[in-house]
Amino acid sequence: MTASAAPHGYTLALWTATAVTSSDRGAPGTAEVLALLAGASLTFVGLGAVAYGGSPMKPERSAPAGTWIWGAFHLPMAALAALVSLLLAWCCSGPLLWGLVGTTTTAVYLLAVSAQFLCFSVRRIT
Image (cartoon, rainbow, N blue to C red):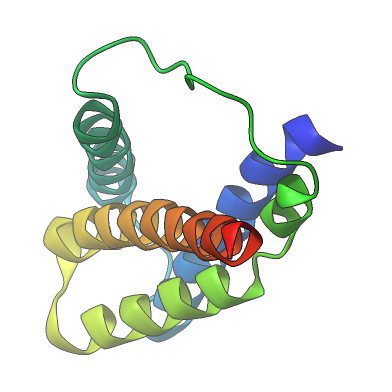
């Protein structure tokens, strides 16, 4: 369960954002799909490089007991990614739109999950 929580949540967030965008703009073509892939991939690698300073992505210590349950609660991240995608669909189109959907969904998901774990950790310490 623990190992699948993050991939499950990211899939929900990206699928929801893509579905919202598709419902507003129609199905993406090849260029748009490739732009979505590039935006999501580059954002993931970029945020990973910032988070880990270019070092291997290996945490120095394991999370406190109970922290991982929060990794399964993805509704806020998916909803926020969908809202951002809907706003983007109103002001952008074509490959730019889909690249931004991939970028913002990945950034929203990773930053929101990080904030969620940080809040939980701070609450546990106090």
